[in-house]
View 1 (cartoon, rainbow over the protein chains, first blue to last red):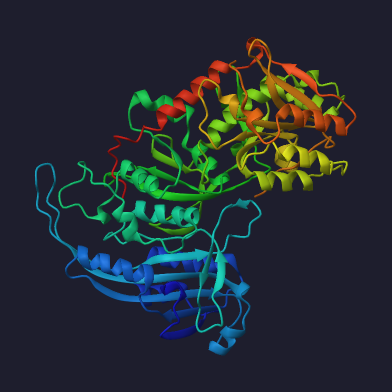
View 2 (cartoon, chains in turn brown, red):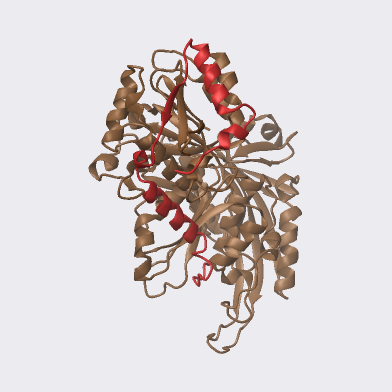
Length: 535
Length: 67
């Protein structure tokens, strides 16, 4: 692997003034925008960023694999070079200093590659216009990882860890982050790199080759003659790749048709992005742009979001989500102002304001689900909302003041719901560690008994109320649904596992003679609010 | 609302779990039976899930070239 290969040459650059990131990128990498973004991120991530390490490395593993694919696609393909660059906080002048520095002082790394090839002339055929030959000679970011920006608003669960060798240090260092890759218009377009960002994390395989992605793309009659992978992909091809990689997902295509406006409004793309992010699996958004030169779409991977606890939007805008006429609630997504995303046209780790892309421009959204989850968090939340609004919490004879407050917000349909995947093991840990505001914890034998109801893969719909949720990041309970089998559209409540409210659990214990579901309530030692789950 | 028996297939039936936990507090489980007209928004949820199902195929013929 190039990522883990020792260098054939290494150089150390102090980046303190008068060193110019702009000049360096212009001089060494032809001024690539996405490459310059890496340098800017290093400065932004750490004001103490003092050293740039640049290494020449051999093409190996996925890079060599790409070179072989490019040589097959383009007869004049030339591999123009491969650099590994890394950004460090302390001053590092030589290999001895590099060997001694703590790995935590590295704020990011990238493998930057130069490709040279000619995209051949493709003459007009039928509806296909004449496409002149195009010479490509450019550096691009083959892959990079930058540590998460330290702002406490930023939340990016599920980021994988990538080992990388720098210099001749004793062992590779490991950085956690969402892999960024850039298209080269030759064997990969934006869709390839977006898939790789998410698939490396999902499959826990940092070395997923682009040739593997290309091998999974089915032919499309919609492609122009002489199609090359860098020309672009259609949504069915993206979905075919995900399916063949055994990555479960939910998607919506929003074509520019008036009859589909309803889908845009009822199933906004932001709900899907948020669901994929909260699941720790990520999402993709394809959009179109206005303008005379705009054609086709562009897709980006989304892997995080901000949580702005003081945002006015949920109250001021009445950010209710309507399951239908009789069920509305406030989704936790309402406190998100921006998504965290890569855009390979511009670089990695951007904040994408959630209303920045207009509804009419959002064309296609894909939300990944965790492995083994048979349905998505959006559906789980809809089913959970019905249970929260249907269970007669007001009849529980506990006198619990928090339960009474919850009942108030049930009646006004102002519940706040947040849906996250959780395993049996994690829920058991969550229950054992749970501590309410009066510092009460659950009885150990109660947890032991409850565990026998748990499933390995569950959706947890957390319930909270205004202020408690946003300002304190706390909740009044949760409802668990098994995610191992698809939801039945007519009997979705078959997925019910257990619900917890202040002072009570609710269990589905059977059915009455008329076939109606029969629930039982039993006590819980947790009598007030507790922390939201954090994966 | 159709019968729901999922829990009884688990390692310990939910009814037994309820009995045990209640006993840990020196109580008995309190039963709640929801009648069909007490479920809020059944049709809403069914319609919501129907649309989810419909959306699964929404990209089948998508002709947006993404590049």
